[in-house]
Length: 343
Image 1 (spheres, rainbow, N blue to C red):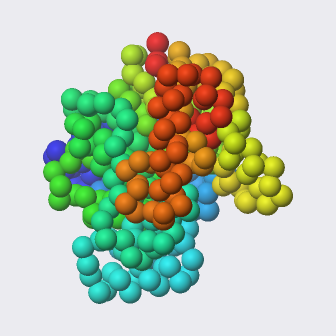
Image 2 (image 1 turned 180 degrees about the vertical axis):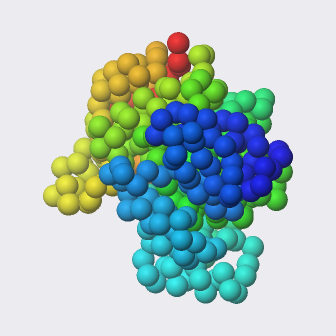
Image 3 (image 1 turned 90 degrees about the horizontal axis):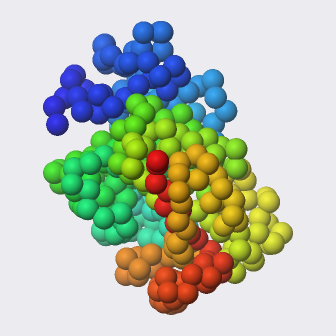
């Protein structure tokens, strides 16, 4: 990929103003549209967060402020949503150096529910899962909510040209630092999935894992609509969502602390709701079981998690195989993939 100043030329060709859908030009270290909207760029990552919109996460406001002021560079720990103790740990390990980026090491707990809590600040390798989307052959894949980039890396290794988007500037910069020397076809954008800064009909695939399920129903539908807009005809999305009928999901929803878990708590959808929303906004949809007994139980994570979590992963894997043969078992799944094809 070629660079125009400090933004990738190929990435620039895919972008448009998320406010008015007009062309963008690079000038003076920023992106500008003909109607006067301007967007900062930090270390090659354009920042498209919209200050006038109500944000779904506090880190979005922090990222926008940091991008405009450069306060907190190069780590931007205030854009990560971490505790003060964890921020100090990042800064300490950054000075000490090491093979693992400290931002990823201290952000790891947010990657897979509570499965990685014991690895905070002690990560020895990057847990990269096997993204279930097939070989990319150089086609474009959008990773919605890419954070530190593990699904982006997985997709790029399968031959996709990956664009990751996330509201955390610090997490995206960590992904850039950790993986830029691997020869992978990846670029990152700091932005809001409700207002994607991309031209219509360009992506072959949109993928998202453990992201859209945290948004309100209204915000989730905005994201799904936007993914449908940027997918090209014949393209598909594969989106992980929490299912309200799952056994663990039912227990969680009925627990007295659920509604006090904050705005970014997991929202649980029925299978019928998921099918209706995705088919209305994208196209014909298939639902498959993704996990039983919890959310984010990935077979590739077995070597990183506790003995109890490994047992749950094994049970979930067996039930997923069973559900592929006996489809009604999906009604007990806690997490599902929605796969929709744009017509």
